[in-house]
Amino acid sequence: MVEGASRITVKFHNDPKEYRARLVGAAPPLDVALLKVDAPREKLVPLVLGDSDRIRVGQKAIAMGNPFGLEFTVTQGIVSAIRENPGAIGDESGLVPRVIQTDAAINPGNSGGPLLNSRGEVIGVNTAIFTPTGQFGAAQFAGVGFALPINLVKQYLPDLKAGKTLTAAEIIRSRPRLGVSLIPLSVYPESLRRQYGLPETGLMVQEVERDSPAQRAGLRPPSRFAYIQLPTGETLQVGVDGDVLLKADGVPLTSIAGLRRVLYAKKPGEAVSLEVWRQGRPFTVRVVPQVLR
Image (cartoon, rainbow, N blue to C red):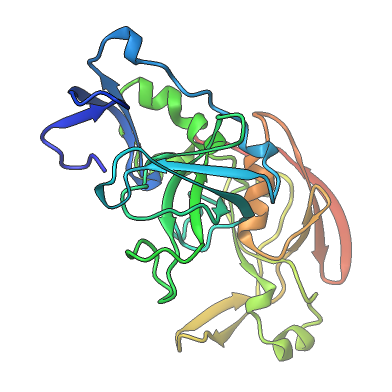
């Protein structure tokens, strides 16, 4: 929205004047920027930032923005789902593990606008639409829009206020981590799982970083490997005798995004309880995730 802009202006409702603004901080991988507007104090009436962790499917959702250049447009719908990010924003590294799905009309020009609840609190930042062609961001609304949860944005407000421009690497370093690389067992062919007596679901440890929380907790990487062919035709080397993470804080693990959801909810110094499968033997271990910055 502001990347590469030589001049940024802001307009207020029922006021034809444009006010100059400057970029304070940004997180391009999250499609978020913080602006400071040079406008009279009486114009600056902030919206209340809500709590996106309290969102419930079916509740009212109100989207604001400038679709197709039509200023100050308001559309209404419901929160259709709170789901794993299907690729609407961020990348495969899991910068945005979950998004808010809404049927409130979101079109090109809504990106960056607020998604509100019925109390007028900001619960998300509109970011993308999904079209019948299977594309994100194309110019045809089909009742499936996505918003960045506001609680995720709140995490980075102090950095943005300090004038930082956050890269993907900096965002990842700010997140709690175990220090392991994992592959879901759902990727493994059933014949391979049977051959090595592996569980049907879980996350197989592939590597354990040195001096990481995972190593200190005693998690073990594989010593034997096999090759599998992915649907894309690529060949992937996978471990067959490493530890398998079955649950995190009692939540069954079927995807890496599911583990990230549990980890990202942790406060600094708070441990996560992992149910681990090792060569047919289940056990539980507590690990304190690490934040690199």
